[in-house]
Image (cartoon, rainbow, N blue to C red; front, side, top):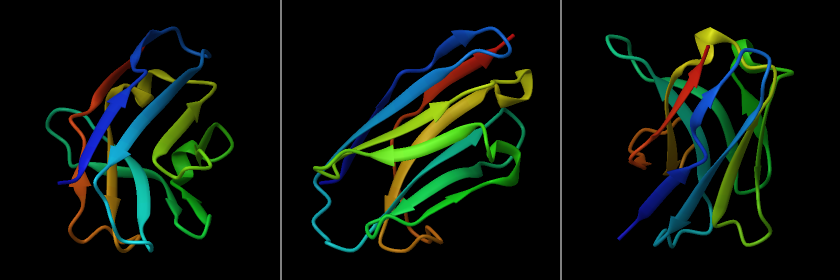
Length: 117
């Protein structure tokens, strides 16, 4: 049973920073990809950043240079350092894990809300 639990969301002023965390458990495959996605009401969920089991990272253009994805040495905790936040970064942020970095059949967390004013 795969479980993902996000934390670290909150309200922040534009220009500020937040660090999201995702605690993962129950995923048994040695090859995997983890990522952060976000969604605002009325819009589709969009990818923010991914990191593969080999350590390769990808970022959406709208967060490059501002956000940084990482994981701890146990590879069970995923992080998203968000700097220089903008009001348009306001969204529910979700953690996901899948075998492939295209995320065809991901497991999702419950989400954590980020609000930038």
